[in-house]
Image 1: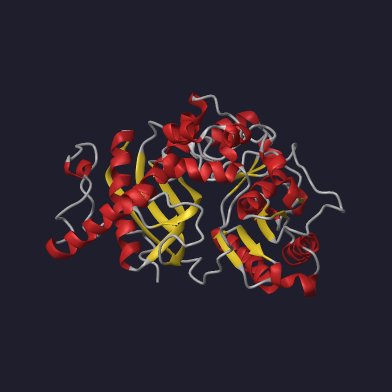
Image 2: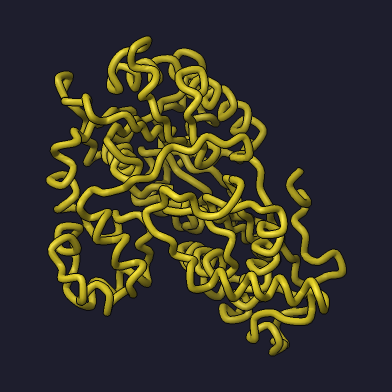
Length: 424
């Protein structure tokens, strides 16, 4: 969930130049909270958190009014109620979320066939072919916002730019309920003052490496000598970051009927686990299984999702959309570890943990990809697949999984499959 509370919202003037900006990124505003308030219009302006009002529950997501009090995702509910005593806590309703997501995605697909779904509440659209019939990109964006409001009662924000990367940043800047166009000729000017973590694919580890050499903004990265970037993050990431910082992103919007399918594994521990190293070790094994199934099905994932259930049965799910699709276990593992760290619940007893690959598409990294972050691991994991095919799945795997950790019980006989089972 975005930490933005809406006070820094920026929207475009009516005469913004959208002539070279065919890419739209559309994100629903505080989606879960907004859906939950549809049947409670009298509470629409109240601060709201989705979760359970129990002593050990945590916030799943919060609306913008609640965020202004400092309430955020993964925060203990008790702390959220301290920050905002008037907080309205609503139980999650996943059937309702899926229902309204389907309506919204159908509106997108009614506008253009080029819709790349990123999750239950966001998507990229390429409206190049819709201009003659529906108008300019900004006009199309406004039409979509009106249709979503009329058909669901919900608000969405539209970012419009020449590339996917910049369109996604624009939608974040325009929240809530806004539309922001970044003209093609103003792309670099828009990007330069932004913090380095706005660069797609820059997580905590990469940000630390860049900040260590005094690179704090996208402009700093754009101006940095190539050798300096390579030393900090390696040649592949250095090329990607250098290109993104200059507004270069050749990736196309890729429509895929497999976008809503997923492959996942999860495990319920025999005893609650608090050791972070043990949890990371389990994530490595789960990521290995997920990646093996992706490769076996010739699929790659655009999104990595983490699920954690604590000893009080409260459950949190977090996901991250990748700059490039992956089928490599190491990448899935690294993303899931960062998602776990983002929960900020170190030491809290964990009952269940799971990893899921979502937004599936056929094949490996597309030819139009900005860079291939998995290149150095892909060959090794393909070799592992070959050896497992000859000698069995237990023949080879990550070395750290061979060292049994007494705090983590063995994986259950069902192989730690998700309760929902394999994607069909």
